[in-house]
Length: 471
Image (cartoon, rainbow, N blue to C red):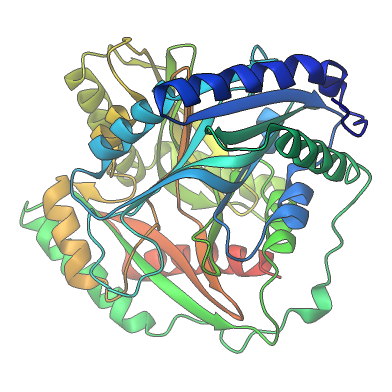
């Protein structure tokens, strides 16, 4: 067999891969089945965002995830297995889908490096059912990508997932794989150039700020009557651009402006993308060690070091902000305990972003072997940081006051791998992009002592930071 030479060291032993694939195919033939082969290889460094730009097709689903602080980024393109769910049991159905797929996956290549295993990419909507029938994302989407390119600490891993059945042409499959690796490696010197001159928007203010303030007053009356202790109310900013929004340029801008946040994007394969830069991790699991963030209570950054320090000091000592923060801590620790985990709290600290700062308490736990990551996601979503407390009453208030579909806003997005590692964030500081139109989302936690004008100012601060990033 001859295959055109590839630069990836992985193809030095393509005879071994060829024979491996033939053996898998023979098994499929004998058992009248099909299997997924997950092929992983370390390649020369290439920016996963450039891979997304160059490889993605408009009609293909994709996912992008980056955290510059952790020196990791991952692009997932197209799907070999996908499930869309419109059911209140979406987390259980998603868990079972992943488990069923894993029974059918065979690995080949260097699987001891970070991101070298098969990853399933997931996004869930805030509510278990979308009220708006034409909202572009279902209540849950889970997919195993055809192509996955990830970077961790400057090392780059390519994973190709492919379906083998009795009739697939192994020669052609290897040839196509080789060509794609060549294409990806040829991108290593590319950079992303941002054209700010194209950024002209027709609308930059909230549609009805007075309505939002009335919602805050209504929520405060419920809080005073002890019906609930917190509710998170959000609003949207709809903008129309003079040009179609450029997904990759916007993501590049977000990662430059918000290096301490999780920059993310997920597409539905129909032209719409949900993107953002979230400061809030829902859960991260690595080798059974879970970390989650209690992130609530906020203040603006100061224009000078003195003003910044004064704002931070006020935040740390504010009874109202600390109360809001403690609601989130209590909720997370209780929900984890109900699953049999033993949560440990680290000391509270400040999470300082470019334009805002938050009270932040990391919480850790060991995950038992029988608890799937999606069970924990289902148990925690939505936290009081994005819904309120008590949760059911707060969600009813949200539906009463918000006239738009939350959809993926403030909902879990992330990945799970074949070893039970995962990373899920909360989709806040986010926007839904559709051609030349974008809908930007931001929310504020309303508790006793909240001031409608200050809550409105907080939302506008978050929206303007996001608007600044869109290209």
